[in-house]
Image (cartoon, rainbow, N blue to C red; front, side):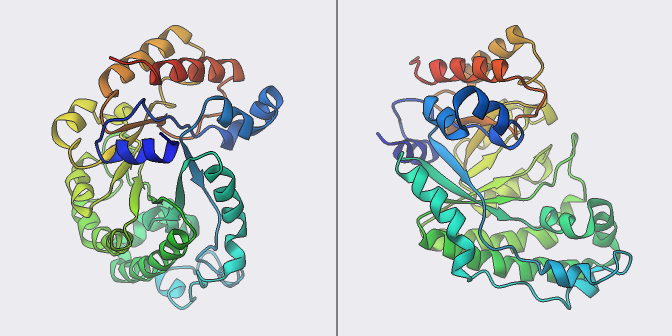
Length: 321
């Protein structure tokens, strides 16, 4: 069974030979991993990662045009006057194509980072400003999101054409105890635009996943209704219990995650780390679960602890109950 087959069968709720494994390890620790293992790629090969998270391709925003506007004047109505860049410049995909070729030679399941809506425009306005603009410029924000959805749809088409297995939409909505904005607003201006993207991917026969940190329990029914195949990370440390997932949503989508970087990995407590990893495998092994970190491993995690964790993950993923 190849890694791609293993991940696809897991997402579909079918039996596999073992738990698929991945980890967001390189963003903050690439130098440390390279010093210990020769390269991040060698680390991924050693632990037989089943998936790859791809980045790159064109960006939607004309940075020069945006920078020409004073930060104090860049409100949603002004941004609507600045067209999005084309997602169809083939040269912009060269880096992603090279990464895809590397991982497909190893049989891995490849998913492509794709901008969401709220998270995407936080990068333009800043999160505090955008939260204010959701109240002050709701119609303009809705139009920005609609325009972004069309861009995302075309971007997803291009990525699927190149052979990506899944479109991964990153759109952080959650704080530690709930959404950062009203769930009714989510339903009004995020849901329909996200549906544009999800439906387009589904029509192509592709898979689609969502990343959102924090507690999103108040909109989890809507996330399921949208038709996402995978959700990341299902953050237990933000009050989203695995019992809730297993009892109510395991038949609707798979989860990617389980290795909590907020409370478990990177704190030097090896006894607790081992106990938590064994607990999570006990709860989720055999379910629609791809073992992964809940976010990027932080730079306070030592290479020794990272090695300890993935040595154990490698072993547990191959155990049979």
